[in-house]
Length: 303
Image 1 (cartoon, rainbow, N blue to C red):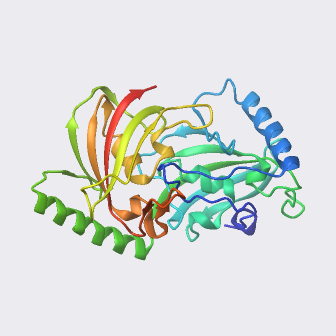
Image 2: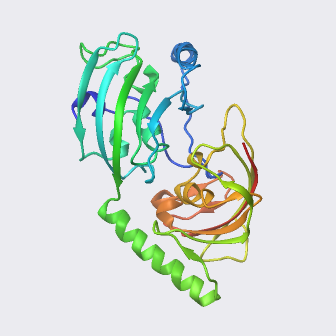
């Protein structure tokens, strides 16, 4: 992709919070915050009657999905394969277009990082990105002035694991299978590498990518399954939608196997958990780097 989309102007973090939700600090400086509110309000008003709009509440990035894919969303070190056309949102002037296959998710502007971490591969969509999550007050050359909202028509072909990620997934899957065999646990082996056991079947349709869920879950380390690292309850709110796409990859995959009232145990490879960064709640409770985890989960409600 050309430099317009490649440069990462906004340094938002897509690292995962200890509560297993994707998080960022959001816009902070007051002038940028005010502008962000105005832009998001305008975008929301414009899209109020448009079907199939999926919004990230923390950033205001919206996705108008015309085709929902069946692959996995991107993670920060995945290489993306994307066809795109970029326009200025308000006057629809095209500033860039192409097909990119060589850059990682973390190489892109904040709006792309957010969208492609919540959009399954194989999808086609229009992305609408507030300026703070594009090029902000600096703009990008003559074609993208300061404080410009952007839109992109995208075809998200694939999110490819790096060689290191693929190797880690292989070794983690082997370790999880060994654990299951030792414990005498018969688990479903998903093609993604996730292993799971549905202990209580639910009723009705399975949860989908963007359903809002009320959940109860407990996290344990595969290396020490005798104690809970953390136990949490999450429900949708205006600030946190609590959809499968708002959680770590292992939960994204596992939740779509579950319906209302389901209880399950997920055996999650580290790359679908907290990866090489690990996680901490800031009070001394941590998940180590490259740790395989166990998640005991219950779907309490599906909106």
